[in-house]
Length: 130
Image (cartoon, rainbow, N blue to C red; front, side, top):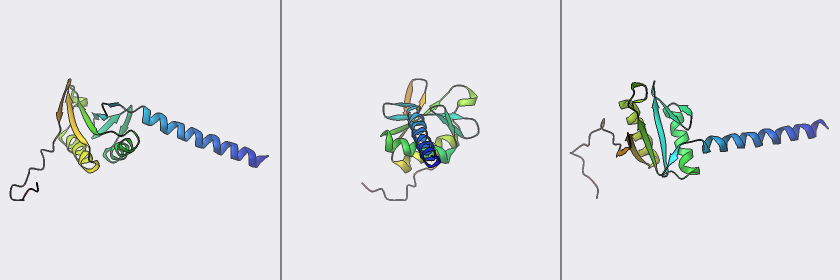
């Protein structure tokens, strides 16, 4: 009897964990196959109501690329100081995009612009493969 109860309890726990993961992925903000990321104070990022550091965001975006087939990341830049992206946050989004081979954009108002890493200038002495 106790063995049956344990099996049932484990089945319920696994089912709830799967449901939680499905809801977490569904809660993310995705528009036009692009994840919408909002900057938060302290080099944190918010997406779908969840707040992440850089490493956690990388894992979450990687999961979205595999499960939701996203093609890009949009850093939503607000007008208030508490949600304006810092240079470090911009750099992190570009780095995550390059690593995962995703397009990166910044949104200011309704306008989307490509987000490029200005902190690492192109070395003119290196040959460019075409």
